[in-house]
Image (cartoon, rainbow, N blue to C red; front, side, top):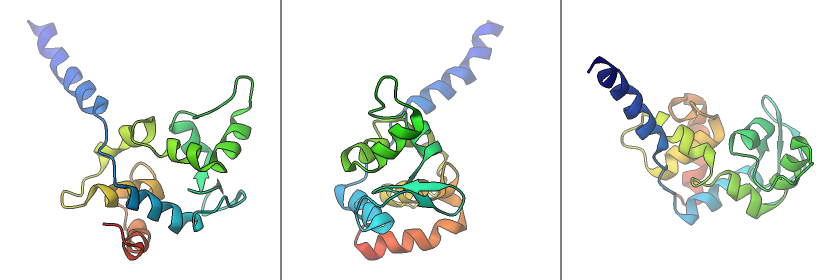
Amino acid sequence: MFALKALIPFMLFVLIKSQKAPVPNKKCLDCICFVESQCKPLPCKWDDDAVSCGYLQIKLNYYKDCGTPDLKKGEKVEDGWKRCALNKSCAYKCNDSYKNYMNRYFSLCKRPNASVCEKWSRIHNGGPNGCTAARTDLYWDKIKKCGAN
């Protein structure tokens, strides 16, 4: 009986972590793309704290965390990241809730009145804990001005 009671918190943790993040509408994703790069395949460049590339200004750690989509057999992860970030379809896969990144971190967002788009935008911009970080306020304002909500 004790072993069963000990398993309950673990099972709840697994259940919560295995839930899929809700998907924002296309307008939200397009606004993220527009704010990041005017939806152009920007070359890799130094950003606030690391190199960012492409349509969604994806960093290497973000690419790794989202499951390295479209990484070719034998390809270096850094090469796959740059290639993926410069390909709109692949970049969207990396930011897609059915891939790993948002599923992993969406539940960390503790903004009860925030829309799905706001949560996605803040996590995309500020990382796993970006949803509640004041540093993502300006970013969210830009997304709203683009027409997303």
